[in-house]
Length: 457
Ligand code: UD1
Ligand code: CA
Image (cartoon, rainbow, N blue to C red; front, side, top):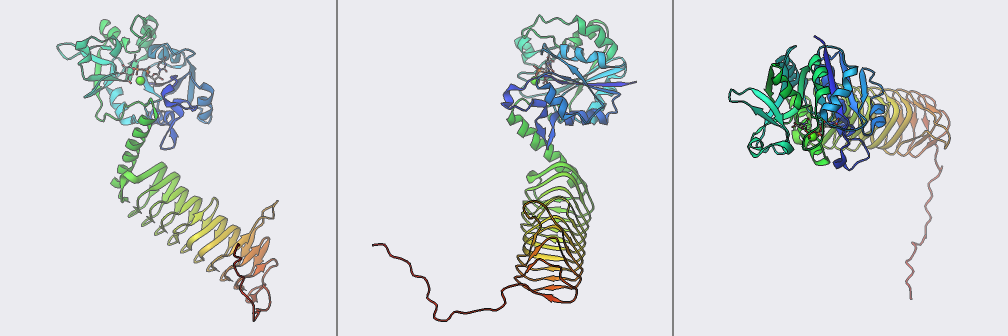
């Protein structure tokens, strides 16, 4: 039986007070609509149709590289039933599953339960039981407990308003029925809208079974209308991810102060301190330790890597046994070998550092190819930019670069070269020699007088 996922995403989301359309507002760095699309993909839907309206071009552009999505335009928001009707021409046969672009926490496993309840000839509605059901459509059941219809808050009697079982909006229904019933919806209700929920009463009238599935987790079907709810769901989502990592053996010193905006693959005994943000694709080997306030984006860290407090690593690879920080910054396209040591206030950009190389303090290493066991002393700078172009600095194995030296690229320091402290190196330095370039003599002016502070009259 083929599955057609229909995602409603035409609403404006005025209460967001934002130029960004509501369904593009992110949860864990990904648009809410993206999370819903992923849930649809996880169900191996044959077709996925997004009903869009407000901010349509912007929404479509954000998903331009996802060609499995079909787009159905709803020019005017005349109600959820009208919205679903716009998607029908893009659907094949089989079952339709209605999802919402602003309900990002729904999981594929809950949707699978809903689909199983619907089978190929029933309607299934995901419901939830709430202490305060205000605002939601209520599930009206008969004395035998069978669902008979859904009544919207604005159309409900006082007795119906007292019902605590609500419609989450997630509905699975055979397409043949929807094709028959949606054109027959009326908008004679308090909101003047074509309600999708009215198909429930139509099913009952036509002798089609309706089953309810009660959501086990009330957060799953939760929708977002404003930034407060967005922030709330962000925390729920982050907690879920943290729990998955904890279950996989990762130590999180405080799961409530951990953010993952992407994916992480990890070995055993990884330890993560508080306020760590992981973005994009992260890979950790065994025994990796991440200190507090660390930001990592698209980073691969080998076994036993230790990242100390306040370090930033982006689009880079760090070899096993290396340690970085505190306060180190590794910019994109850097590849650090094994047992590399990077200390505080060291910036590395588009550089390769061989095994065992050390840069302990206050350096800038950009556009550099650096060998193994090189010692980069405090304050060393690769001068990679002449104001117009960038050039490469090459340093051989076992070289020693003295404190406060500038290497003016393009320049090559040979294996085992030794650069004296305070040198400005503009020409290649040979192997096995001391190269120094600084003011030759040290002078002391005897009888020199310290400047005096001028006192104003
Ligand atoms: C809807 C349900 C209600 C349920 C609630 C759960 C109906 C009639 N009511 O009410 O029973 O308890 O959701 O949150 O279905 N949308 C469109 N086009 C439209 C109208 C809506 O795309 O013409 C989209 C909205 O962007 C939104 C979703 O459908 O994502 C729900 O619409 P909304 O107007 O918020 O419905 P509710 O009144 O909350
Ligand atoms: Ca709503």
